[in-house]
Amino acid sequence: MAAKNNDSDLFIERSSSGLIARTEGLSGEPLLTQWLAHLLRQPSYQSVLLSFFVGEKTTRTALSNITIRDEERDSDGSGTPDIQIAGEKLALIVENKFDAGMTKNQPLRYMQILKRRFTEKKVLVFLVPAWRKKEIQTILAPYISKNAGVSVRICTWDELAELLMESIHGSELIHEFTRDVLRRCKVQSPLKVNELNNASEVLAKWLRQQELLKGIRERLLEEPIFKGMKFQLETKPEWDEDHCYMGINVAVSDTVSESEWVCWIGFWNLFQRKNRSATPLIAHVYDSPAAKKRLPKFWSSLRSLRAANIVAPLVHGHGWPIPIRISVIKGNKSVREQADKIVAYTVSVLSGDKQKRRETPGRTRTNS
Image (cartoon, rainbow, N blue to C red):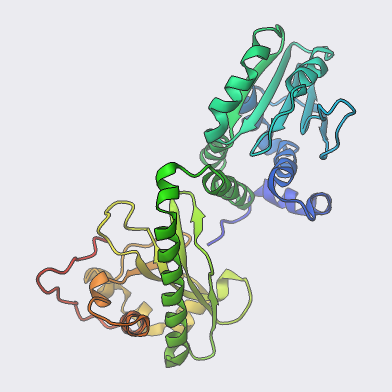
């Protein structure tokens, strides 16, 4: 569920046409750079961001110039800085090095630019994902000791995202920006040897999960409780901070409006993060007008379902989780049969079935 916009977000929405034009067709490092520069222009975020890059508490100084340069290259191949900030007491260059290499002359070129500034503090920042920090430190070591007067810092995207989440609450823009940054940091990190060794196994499991989701979707289409609804099948896992999920979103129409979302069903490691034996099969009901209208029996029975530990505590932004115990699909011989059992269990809970499912010896009970 999206957070309400605060005043700064309203300002950003009103002034976003230029940003949309600048970022059209961009991806990767250029896109992140443009969004970061956009945040730096907003007075609500400047103090937090500048303090992070400088490495000490910085007062909110009026910035006389913020420039963003695209992927243009100078004749010597050293490039132009991604972001240059010039204030009354501060000269700052921020270079985004998410996954691109660093040319030989880049550090010296940027230090020369800063040395020409008539300010008390001159800072050169390389912004990298955490997994590149040691590599960039090694590259910059020879330059740092030879350039007095310019502070060279290596900051990580991971720490920046975490700082923004902790410092700025209730901003939908910050939520989406930090979520994308953390996802990129995770999925673009290099594969480790053990991950490569297990890649075939992981891929096979992923494909089997897709087949089960397709079977679940076919069964959902047959259920009267979902008549006329739309089913959006997620075709690949999605990472959101430490969450991983892949499933089917059920809504009353094809709209992206969260008010028309009804429920979701699929794989989600919500409970496995605390208990490795817990089920990754989850359904959840959105706390939305559409869900309350289409699933009246669920809402009228919610207190009893919670008391019976059939529905887990509310997860803000997602809804009421319904853990589907692994024992539900044990003993089935086909994907179709497993899909039948999963959908039957989910529908029974959505219909307000308050019967406590008894566990037979040897079955694992979900810890929710």
